[in-house]
Image (cartoon, rainbow, N blue to C red):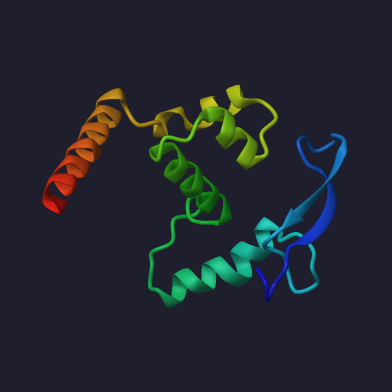
Length: 129
C-alpha cells in the first residue's frame, strides 16, 4: 500500500442511486479509477486462468467469484453476517444472509472447530511445561 496508495473516490456506495460517499479504494486501474468488473475479467482474470490452464466456467469464475470466495472465508472464520454485509457494501444484512446463508458453517462444524482449537491449545500448553 506504500507503493500503490489507496485512491479516494466518491460514488453512490450503498445503492446505485444512493447518497454519494467518499471511500478509499485499494484496487484501482492505471488511471486511478475504480476497477470495472468486465475489464478485470477480460484483461486480468481470464488471462490468468488461461496461463494457469484452469478450465473456465462462465458465470462462475470472474471477479464476482472472488467476492464470494472472500465472503465464504470470512463466514468460515466466524465473521458475523452484519460485519460481512458492511464489508461487502450491502445496506441490508438480511440480503447478505439470503445470498450467503448456504456458506455459513453448521453448528456441528463450529463446535468441532472450537473443541479442536481448545484441545490443541491444551496440548501445546502441556508440552511447554
